[in-house]
Image (cartoon, rainbow, N blue to C red; front, side, top):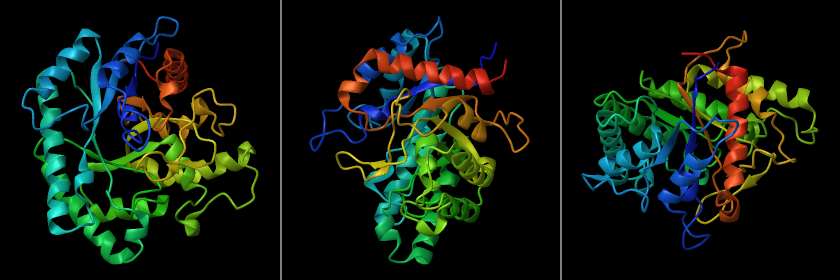
Length: 340
């Protein structure tokens, strides 16, 4: 029986793309309860990955970690990776913006350390991005990338003080991270032992189509995206380049399109696990990230997480959604998991 990697749900989809200019934010307690209630053939989620964003969390509250630990413990869940709320700053901004960026990483690492001390977090990373748009980055690609790299280095040094690793999210809307080649170049330039890559099956599939970086497109324009051999070859190219860096992994589905809601830029559309328009064979294609080029398990992540950012609230508030997601996660673990 495979009991690794542990199976996690995410809380940030209750926040990302929500708010005054979109649908209402879904309360953390609601997400926690739906996660804990999900069950498929006696199997339940093992934990949650947490977005440390207001109004779910206040990092200035010294008791916030304790309150979270008490909530998840009641449901016998663990906390895994944390999303640092770095968007009040920018890795490519002014000196003050870069300072805020690093300070948010520090606060997130401190929060993570408290959760470890409270016994509810045994694994996971702190997730970051450049907090910079592709358009702004493109005004000076060389200079802006150097600035992002310098900020990331400083953030890595701060994270190292807490024994944390930072995972740079591969998403087409973040400058210097918006293609698979840019992402590799940025990680290589940072050159710190505690930085890696966060792969999301939806976002990284868009890398193959060259959105925001047509020069790095892999699947030719006009190709049949329902041709599995075309998709598999493209995924192999991307994963061979980024797998060695991958330290955090999101299971997801994508239909080859982009989507944004609220204030969030357009990025790889997250589809429901059962979406008939999904182009990914979730359990098979997860193997490109979870196994090496020879088909051997990397065991690089002790847990994996589902990401369904910008799902409509009607979908997220339907318990069946989470049961379907859990079922897809179980299939991934059945195919690529291992025993303790």
